[in-house]
Image 1: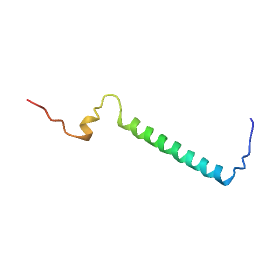
Image 2: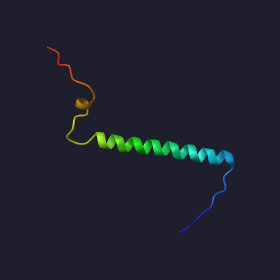
Image 3: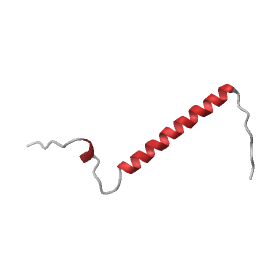
Image 4: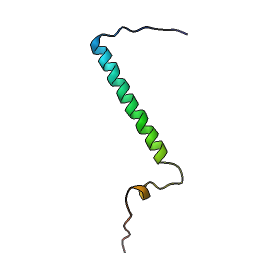
Length: 54
């Protein structure tokens, strides 16, 4: 197993933190959507009432 050590510049460190923040946002969004869109459920029923037109 290879191991590497990074010594980023302050600008690179800031970019790495921003990248991690974006990755965490996307991960949390995926977890939320996975929990919401389960098979056999209708998400439209959870968000707004359906208006039936005559």
